[in-house]
Amino acid sequence: MQITFLGTSSGVPTRSRNVSSVALRLPQRAELWLFDCGEGTQHQLLRSELKSSQLSRIFITHLHGDHIFGLMGLLASCGLAGNVQRIDIYGPSGLNDYLQAASRYSHTHFSYPIKVHVVRPGVIYENDEFTVTCGLLHHRITAFGYRVTEKDRQGRFDIEKAKALQIPSGPIYGQLKRGETVTLEDGRVIDGRELCGPTEIGRKIAYCTDTIYCDGAVQLAEDADVLIHEATFAHQDAEMAFQRLHSTTTMAAQTAYAAGVRRLIMTHFSPRYAPGNAIELKDLLREARAIFPKTDMAHDFMVYDVPRRRAVELNKLGVS
Image 1 (cartoon, rainbow, N blue to C red):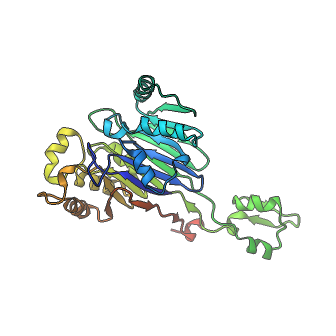
Image 2: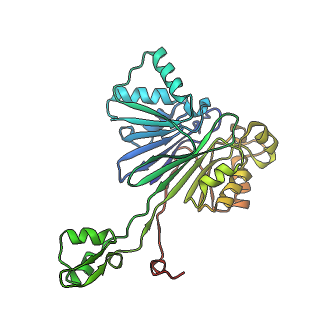
Image 3: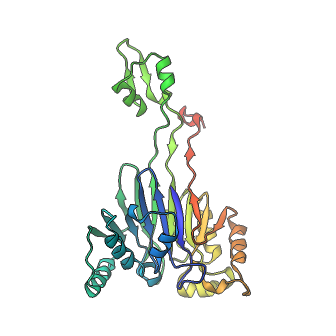
């Protein structure tokens, strides 16, 4: 699982930062998922190492322009390129109306199927490897945060150990790889878990923007390997954050701390903190790290590989 930040500014783009969009690459499935699609996202994709032909799902948090103005252009370009099979889009009520109107008035017709899913809190998508859930955030309009949970996988099967035990190859190996218990023809009972390495713990990613500090964000981010959270304002501008229902750096850090995440990556920064101003982005990072030290500040085209956790061997034996 690899995260690429395609836009990290709030409200309007700057020379160095485009508006909101984050890509999640799933190399094992040759799929690309997008979270939000601000204006210019397709240009950012072209400038990155990502392949738009792998785009399969887009998750929209809310209907403010800096999160959706790039959606129609991206979908149209994918259709003209002819290299996308299908795209499923998830978002709040009204998203389908927006796309239908844009398509109608621009006379755009897609050459591939597009399905818009109206989301509600809970599970919104699941396959054999991932579960995606969403939850309500607290913003000026209806906004959702998303959580991607990778399912746990059985550890690597030790084929050499199986051969040493003179276990006959064939369908039995498949059962043992799945951690099942098998009785051999000679009466021996083999526990497949003893032939597999440590369980590969599924990774968890939470994406929360736009929102002020709220319980919904904490719940979505609980025990996540990485939390991507907006930090539009410095702590000094907290009053403005409350008025506009956006987060400060300290709110993002408090969310990460309360949720017990392993890494916080802040994004969605106000252009007011440009170099040379009284408060700069480096000050925002310092504020957040004072509360949650494992904090990073995203920039456009930043790539983050989500590390995989492994269960401790002793846990398999019931030892804590």
